Image 1 (tube, rainbow, N blue to C red):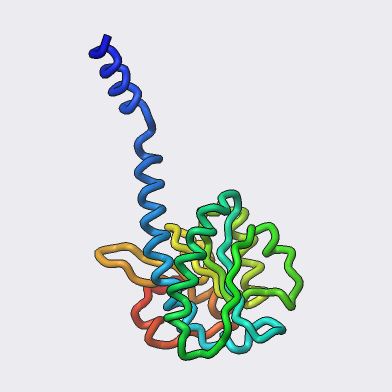
Image 2 (cartoon, rainbow, N blue to C red; image 1 turned 30 degrees about the vertical axis):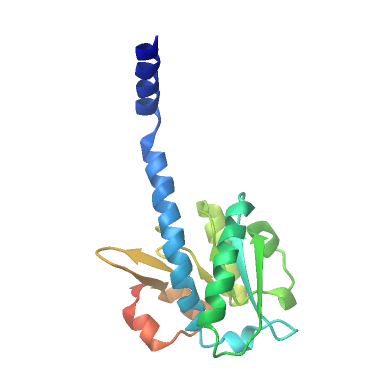
Length: 190
């Protein structure tokens, strides 16, 4: 009986779609690395002071579609790292977890300066976000593969090394400017 139970367990594990388990682990690693790169992404945005809230705060949101608990975990990481990265700007931070659906309905006076995408978006959600971000000058960063190539302003490129990625077409359309050094080390997409 014990041997039969072990055999069934092995068969069950082999029949589980392991590619999705590996994909989730890879996505989680990309997000963790992306959180570190995001603070540099925000710090190199040269128009932050022009995009503060009415109260003079730098509003940054962590976007999600369905899983706010992950976004809340990422927000805690950003609270620590963004304060360090932006220490010389003297802009008070306003960090918030926000569903994509709610972001797309915000009035102009509540627009964030920047947004971190906390979970993979489908093609329609990504395109809505790209269009909205361009229109409202929101610097959006996504750690997920293919997002920068498909219009998201910033992200990461994983080849032999990890480095920032920037979509130049989106940057120009958004009328945003980033420091030259950041652009010189980033992988650039048109």
